Every structure is written in C-alpha cells, then in structure tokens.
Length: 399
Image 1 (cartoon, rainbow, N blue to C red):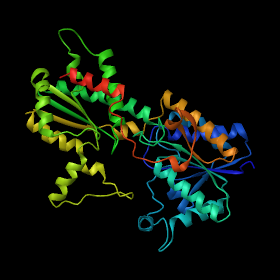
Image 2 (image 1 turned 90 degrees about the horizontal axis):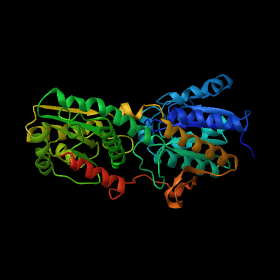
Image 3 (image 1 turned 30 degrees about the vertical axis):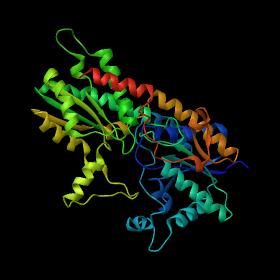
Image 4 (image 1 turned 45 degrees about the horizontal axis):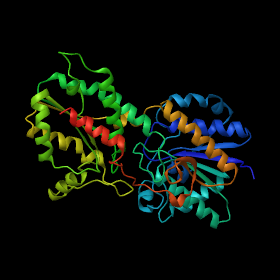
C-alpha cells in the first residue's frame, strides 16, 4: 500500500545535514508521488508530544531546495527522551502521570501518519522503533525509516553518519584562523576543543583536515615554519593521557617553536575533571539522557589551565569550534550522502520496510536499510586505523 501521509522530524543536537536531509526527503517523495501529504513535526519529539507540526504544502515544496544551502534545521530540534517521563512532565511536554510513548503514539494516529522519517542519532532511531512497536500493538501500522546523523560518527554499524564530514571540514576552517593567534604572543598555548563525548572520530578527522591544510598552504622558508602552525598533540577519549607527561612532551615544542597547538575532544579527560569536581563538592549537571553536560565540564579550559602553568605559557587561548561546525550547511560530500540516504529511505518506505538507512559496516559498507536491533551508539574511534596512525605520526613530527 502506498503511503498517504509522511511525517519528518529532526532530533538531538544539530549536525550539518539536517536542512539538506529534510529537503532531500521532500524532493524524493515529490519525485515518487506529489499527492503524498508531508507533515513536519517542530522541535523533534517535543513537537510530536505537543502536536506542534507544519504541513509541507505546495508553496513550501516549491522553495524547499533552498534548504540545501542552510545549516541548522528548518523544523527545529530538541533533546527529548520518550522513556524519561519525569523529564517530559517537568518540561510541560506531557501531563502528570502520562506516558510520553503513549502520548506520542496517539498524536501520530490522530495525524494519520503512515511513514515517519526521523533524522537523528541512535537515541532518536531507538525511540522511533519503540513508537512503531507500540503502534503495532494498537493495530496501527507505522513504517519508520530513520536517517542517521551525528557529527561524532559513533553509530554502530553505520560507516559514515550524515553531517560528520562537514563538521570536520568546518572545524578545520575554524582552526585555520584561531591558530594564527599563536603569533600574537611568545610562548602561546592554543587549545582547540572539538565536540565528541566518548568518540574521538570528529577530533581526529578535523585534525587530519587541518594538518593537510598546513602541509599544503603554510610555510615560507626562513620566515614561517609549518611546524609552528601544525598540531603538537591530539587528545581523544580512546587514548589515555597524564597531564604531567603530556606537558613534558610538549615542552620541547614550546621551547623550540615558541608555541604549542592542541586539538582536544570534549570528552578526553572528562572523567578526571568530573572526579575532581565531585571531590570538591561541586554538582555536575546532567542532561535528559543521564549524560554530564560537557559544556559545563569544560575539558578544554581544564587542560589549558594545567598545561599553561606547566609549560610556563605567556598566553593561553582556549577555543571551541563545536557550534560553528555543527550548524554549518552540508558540504558536497555530505550532500551526496544525504541524497543517497533519502532516496533509499523513500524506496524502503514504499516497499514497507523499516530500519535505519546507512552504509553498513557489517555488510561491506553497502548503503542499505539496517535493522533497528543492529543499531546502537557507542562506536569508538579505531586508533589503529591507518589514517589515524598517519595523523599521530605527523603530529609527532611537529614537536
């Protein structure tokens, strides 16, 4: 049976693919059948819970292509965990004692949704799968076809999440400007904090892009040393470090070049910072998913303060590229991935199949529909991968 009404939502943190993914899905459904109604829920699952939606009518469809050039999400995002009833009630998304899953399911039934496309991470996909199962028990068929986005690129078994490549690209562009600050003062320490709670992929990929730029564009014999612009350490959650040992290693670069440049994942060393905060009697703020709020943990500042003192830095600059990188419009690489995923998503929905669209690492990286029970978060950066090892060798060469 061909779908009559399709709904789209974007959820979780921003990624540089959301606007393009919404546009691609609308365009793909239009290519299939312009009579299909399309509904967009505002602010992710918050919009489903409150019935806040927008009809993607003919006028919007006519202009939707412009969304490919935008960052952010035209529908808006939120971090809502449907299984966290207390948090949903506290935020006014459900009434006292209501089950968010039941409320969301009832809204989808009321809206007559046949197909739900979610664009988000593994938590977003898991919630959609739970909704489909709940509605199945209510004798209402809901086809859920999810598209994976996360700048962390940490979804199992998806090889490349939408938005990750663009975030690494823009993080490098950000660094190309701010690391020039090393020339503003002798003995400068520049710490660039990159998003990434438990996975160092984005930090490593951003560092790879930046190092490539340095090697291709920086250097004037006798005047500008590329090694002073290059990175002297890349810190990711997968590789443990001791701040004193790191300082001893970096002291060579500080004495020789007069500066030190670091890329740091926001989750690298976070456990130690949190432990120190708790020991000092401080309260660590948590999000709806039970994760410490890393913007409050502020690993980059902690590392900058410690290393600045140990390296006798005259100037310490700590910068974060996260919001700049994650809110960018999709680059050409991500636009191609988004288009392929949207096409597969619509094809799958029409065929009555459900799951998460992605390049399946457990099936030779073939783009296809991955069963929900095979999808999870928590993929780590493979530090033994050749491209990561090459990066670490290049960084050591800058010391």
